[in-house]
Image (cartoon, rainbow, N blue to C red; front, side):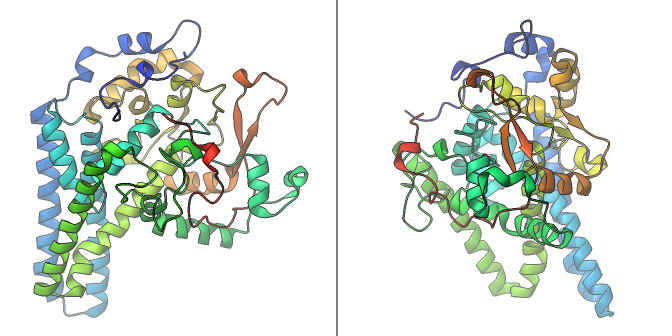
Length: 417
């Protein structure tokens, strides 16, 4: 059985409710019907706009920056180009993300074609990521099944630090220098390392027992632990897309040299890597956000335990609102991004205090807070029944970075889905 990309998650897992009066039906009914309808014209206009932005920036860089006679000025110009082009590349990646959710257009063929091309160019294995990301949306904030930024619980966290589990409250946060360096490591290599190893995912995010082969738990392994056997051909196709991009880069290097390709493409790609990690991390990591064990988890609990943040003009016009309107995206991922604000405003009154938003702070303070205050989770009230238990973040020092997935899990951890 392949992954069901069509059904709403509440048709596949326990739906749950916001409260006794508000469930998924009431939330859906509160949203204008047109918000659920993707438009060929609107989606394609954003695609062509972003492609035009990217091409214009690249052409301007090629023709004008090398003509600058001052070396320092050229360096500054290239750095500015890399940053701005990286923002545009993120927008293109987000459009590929829309395609993966079938929110770009009514056509599955067009969605998968556009998404495959955009993500391959951004060195993202489209169908592989589409599969695991779908599961993330079904099981968001489930400590056993989720795919993204699953925090350790008390005993696991203590074992990472080689510290007495009963004395965790005695630990203090890392020094600012150590925290800064850990953030740099996460932002620099977090995205490709997640694709390679599936780190930060929960044990039962796997479809098979953890692989002992190099990168057997990766998004690039057609027969690896992440995917069902029948998905192998699509995973292989994703790998071919990356190989095609690698060939184009090799060909470009043969024509214009390594330095020019690095400046034109690698710089923006590094920024894309940074933004993907930062955006997804901050969507799901905040002191106010709960996590849930399987006994207490439902789809709605998990979906609304994400946070909407603010990134100003860049977030709205270049990142297509992915930062500002994430709660609605988890509730109804097939709503196109250009309807997300209207849909969000429609459901906020129904969510009430269950709606999480942090739009008064800038990006960096939020990242620092998440890194220092959100290291592990434990029940807010251990005495309550497991079905009513809510897990809350606790602060502390950062454990050493995990290199591979699977070392902490046994075959018994895998739950067939």
